[in-house]
Length: 421
Image 1 (tube, rainbow, N blue to C red):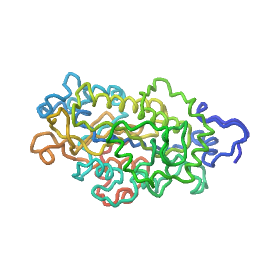
Image 2: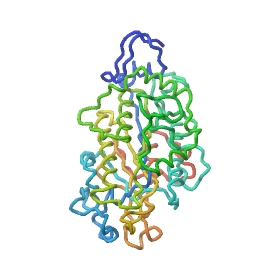
Image 3: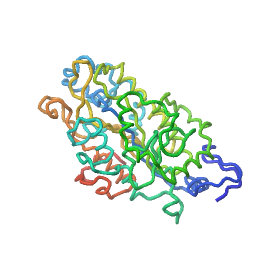
Image 4: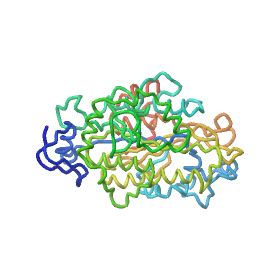
């Protein structure tokens, strides 16, 4: 289809001038979408690679054992951003406070994978495949979740004409979680997005752990098909370099903030994004983790400020967006001899969005008494991460085929935490 007049979508987020041949999904976006009253529900998944310390992120400041186990790296009561009298946020996450008070942000504590592994690579693989303990799964749960989702588009659109941006990963290669039969693309930088492989202009990984993970991803996941060519064509028509975030959407400088800013741009351009994935590394704090300042404070500031800016940038589109965060496992309840923490078990998940019943910590808190610790050292898992994701996929996105999304998982809707309105 040729376009012979100037088109603007959402104040110029997408502009096409002259007689430019565009993919079908892009012309539909230009003439339809929000203007036709279509509600495109979106899920954004954020992975904290390296095993984040959930106990210093959402602090159980009402439990004396927490302070006894962490004499040098605890978050003092006077510094905790109190949430409900028992739990509180790390002070570096002040940008999350308004989201909590507005009841857009919910927290699930003591969540994680039931598999006992403390291997970063195995645990990340299980969290992304959605099959804990099973190493032969050949696709990711986020890709499988797409199979039964309704495609938001005009009637009688063919399967091959789905939006090239329906499933996207912000990064140099397609991650495990989005590998599978459904088309998905990886975008490292909108300004020099190209087909397949690694972008030579990509910023280096933040540390050796992230670099090791990146190189471990199978090269077959780097290849993409026609959907990528369509996406490249669309982005050449758009002008990513001229994008201006909404007022007060102050993204931190760096890879993660840039990723979420570009994701907001794609969503606001009305390009049919349904699921998206981004990750942030730097959580593996075996040595000198820090407390209110230091390593964990620095990465938490980047993490929370980027997500808050993304939420602000979306504006009213946030009403149709849910963001879920996850990490492969938590850290030990006790600090180690190097003023850090070692690989643990349960962790914390954040759920942010318009339909979220926020302002509450969900899940059963198992406690930090010695008798309640997993293997005598870790916070115990009381909420399977798949239960959290199942509720979002089923109740919000509308995919009821949870046995396909999470094969072997016996969780039932009656067990949902009910954090969605």
